[in-house]
Length: 330
Image (cartoon, rainbow, N blue to C red; front, side, top):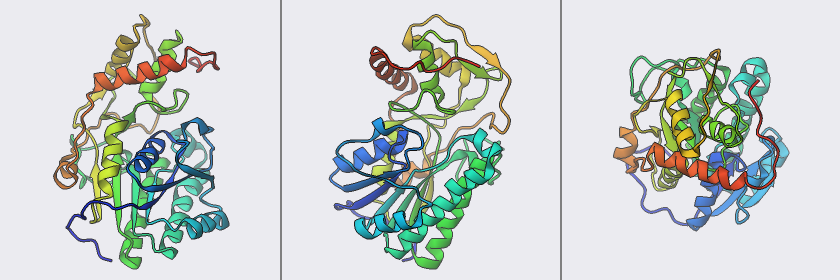
């Protein structure tokens, strides 16, 4: 089925397989699909140990994407019409130190998924990629036709999957839609993770720990609240052409501005610790989302200060009960 430039009508009830379903973003997406009336199956290898993110109303199976027999069984039994692919090894430092593990999870895992989707005649694949594929951009906000120049093994692996999606569409007629995500934040994001600075700063400040800022605090990102990302994934079900889309505000927010917003919402009078920059990180980026506005009717709605207040309220409630410490700066 060739990719056209015409949108589909309202999405009927669909069988949707969501990978990485215990992850921060995918757990929200899976729940929203289920609430919209679709039949949803979430799969995850639970390597992040975030089982608490799983929606109890969404069917779930523990599956490693590179386990060919297990993945084949899932596809044969569930027969997904749509695959929403979020599963990934997302630690940039690990991708540098253990590139084979990174490629095994992100490239081979994705390729195994596409192979089963082809065999089961899946009608559509929605893939969560990364704006890191651009490397340090030449101009901002970045459009989707900016040259691809990834700086890390992780973003190389994300772009490799984009290329496989195009190949499977050309050779086997599987339509795809690619979202290149900005910095997404919101409830359920792991405050102990390697990424997710809003959640990390929130967890540390609420526990009286001075957060680390890598570099001088001038590094920028485009921040979008998770509810707006979910909205785009719902709209993707009603859009039939292939395409690559940015989701973003087109605004740059510095690390220091993030810290100050979280500190204000948390009401904690602590100062940050400035430490050495991490290699392989983009220094400045923001995204032009005009294509998503024009073709999907999507635009972000939750302003950054309001989103930060929601994250702080979420973690303040959960940190009232005794729980393990979220960690201190090294």
